[in-house]
Image (cartoon, rainbow, N blue to C red; front, side, top):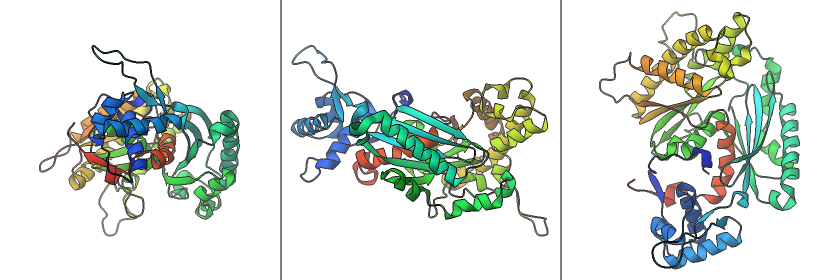
Length: 411
């Protein structure tokens, strides 16, 4: 589901195609919806051309979708000859989805409409999440959403997508969190507990993979075919897209660059090499601020590049970029990527500064034998995880099957 604010002019590498054979009604409806989502408001003749469906089939499908409230008619467009064409667009009120991000420092709950726009949002900050506190807050916000939409519109909510770390209890010593509290997450089935709160289907996805979904569907993934996605938050993590498909891996950890080592392991050394997340995370920046007696929350806003935070930020940028560059070099040698896309829970100015330092750090490596991937800024920002979560039920219910019904096509 592509938010209108996130549509780019990049060429679409995958185009939906339908089939005029019988028995494909639901799939063809999804193809039509996805075509309008990719290209914006379209008249029936243009939808037929793009989907390779007959004009009669398109007429029948669009009538059903209009009757179902999923499409709306625009103002007629008059051409040089013939009858004026009527553009059809997605009805923002046609369906809704709820995205929930459970992070190590905050909880976000978003209500997203059919075009991917955020209708309402709530946030709760904490030192580290308590399962009971998180579930109680989600329950309250689901009640708010039910009240906001009313009974009829709430029936159009497709489900809940939850973005959360797969190992909430991991790295407990680094975070300085009580081990008992961290371990309670191992006994919590978050998706099942959320489903019990409101009887809506809930799906759980690794938080950085959910952010990668948002970028794949609503950002640069519309034109970049294979990329490593990097998201910088309390910890750093990522996702992996190959041939325009999110690859989760056997255990859901594909793209988990935060665990990548930053050096060789030698016999007799005191311990294993430190991991990327121990250097290239906002937690490290906050600790620099704290050691200097500065407000640590500046890491997420414009103050990070202002005095007196700026010198500490610049030191963090150099070290973080060097650490990310090592991981990018290793990933590019293994995966042959188009790009690396970097985003995070901080200002766009800090993201630009990080990309500048990353370009310098990547230039210090030899790329002989491989192609250096292009480093690009992510387009979604701090909401990427919750929006990616919200996209899961919308795509499950309204997008054509990506394996069978999205066929490669020239731009």
